[in-house]
Length: 329
Image (cartoon, rainbow, N blue to C red; front, side, top):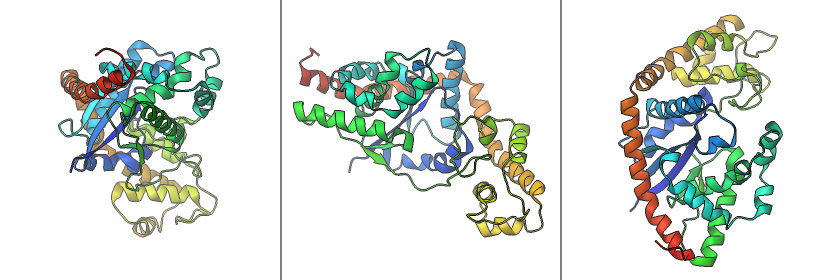
């Protein structure tokens, strides 16, 4: 039986945090046994916001290095930059002509980002979901891992694919959301009732994998707790429960074992030890990331190979689309 295809894209300006790592990334390495997996650094999407050119390039390589450091073997997965595969942009233009203005106007992310970038509400920001649809449909993708903030875009992708298929036949696979193996749900350090997010207003709410050890410890020391100084898990103690969950994930202990480990600890000692456990668990990933970032030749070889594989997979779809609508091929 042929493997199904999973496509996942991360912004070139993305920054992995421990919620990504403990909630999803630790399961990525095993997916290639059952699926054809493409992990794209979507650098074209980043252009909807003005970028510093050098910083954008550095950040794109950083995402690639984290992909590999967290366990994505380039031999088993296709890793590449979106801008290295021109078929993404070419299919996006075609799909623009099959996407309705009313559909794009309803996209909540356009409204949110427009409010944050009032001096640069550009056409790319408006048609961003069409490029995302092209990213997915280009590879006859069966499954797409999506968070709550991207579900609307996947629904648009499905609508566009079904509309195109209704006119021209079964050209595109209509993708489904991929529901990954349940990992830990890591909440914010300052707002433990909300999921940890890189887009929050306060950087102390989030632990990034790129944070230096001292910064990680300081963030944990600032984490919200409560007033009774007792370490146990309870819905009434979201801050303590979140820290216990993080500690359990990085040490391999059960929640009960973690509670027992801090039976004699006050909150100050508790938060410090959780921070130290995270620093220790991250150390080998950080070391591998630093090694990879120092070997640009290797990263470029991964990109060259990944782009060639991605382009080879994309080409038949683009030919089918062009033939269907009457463009010469």
